[in-house]
Image 1 (spheres, rainbow, N blue to C red):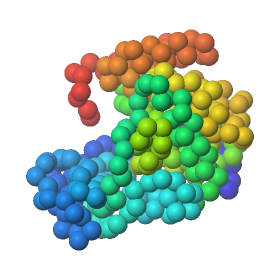
Image 2: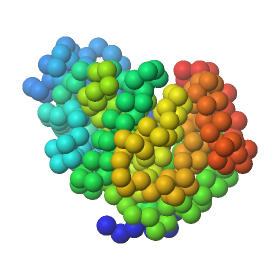
Image 3: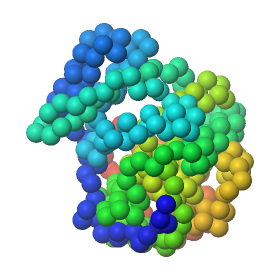
Length: 304
């Protein structure tokens, strides 16, 4: 696979990551509920993209950039890479809001979302071991980091608040990634994101991120940044990933991901986790703390 080329420092071609209107999401859920694969009651919730049945669940498109091709490709990843993930049981598309939008019915996997606590080091190792299998075995699918407009998606919320800051971060990301090997990546996997556990056992890896082809150390750096906010460690993640960690590139990428994640945490009104990442940033690249815009004034619990 070609190495990472120059990143598009503009955002002119950046796909919209905005949410679909609630009525479109509801129409997709109703279409999925008619599938014989779905074993739950008739949905009565509005604007909710994931609806659980008894042993299955409905998941529908709820952001504009999400594609059915990635969902179908994820089923190939599950089989080829041996990643624990919900099996795809049925899927389809309908015309909604003037465009074709997709729905899926998936196996419902038992487990709970990861978090802080005494199991965190073992959970970090389990997640990063699965990530390594993804990088080594998964078929390539989806959007490359160096595709036009894609890099800006990594700093999308910052871009909305402070375009100049986002441009500086994308330029730094370009310097860290240019010429790096590329592989299939998850893009948003961590103990604190898109995984289910029973105890320390990893039961399922859920939705891939918006970028599915990139430097493997970018995937690992984001994973570490998310879990450092929970009290995790770099050492546990690296131990789980095993041989093949490019420590030099990881050291270049981790501060950028820490900055991105700290911005998210401040917007989510999670000051304790944000303080953990500030400590990490001061030890690595303290100037990044001065780049970031102020937290969003929106009330806690409000989402765009």
